[in-house]
Image (tube, rainbow, N blue to C red; front, side, top):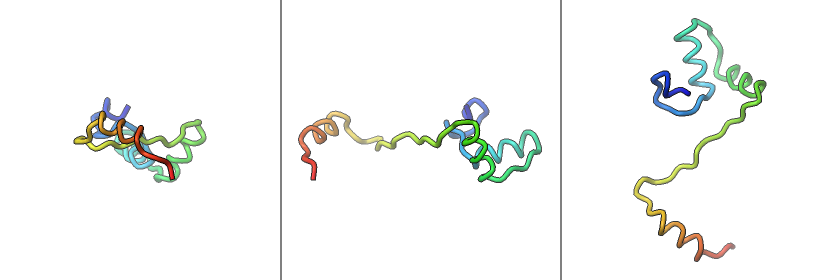
Amino acid sequence: MPRDLDYDQNLWDGVLLSHHLQKHYGISLGVRQCQRLFHQLGFTLQRPRRQAHEADPLQQEAFKKNSTSG
């Protein structure tokens, strides 16, 4: 994981992989090339859902239960 290598994010992406390969191995790959490598290896781009720090989980659940769909 990137955090284990002292990066400030949890997930690998094309930008970070490109930077890491250049910095540690002297390999120059573009961001798009790194994204293709991920795809060829069977990885998919997944991002965690964002949630506001000040959000109240109980109020969110109550809103979901009480809201009506379109």
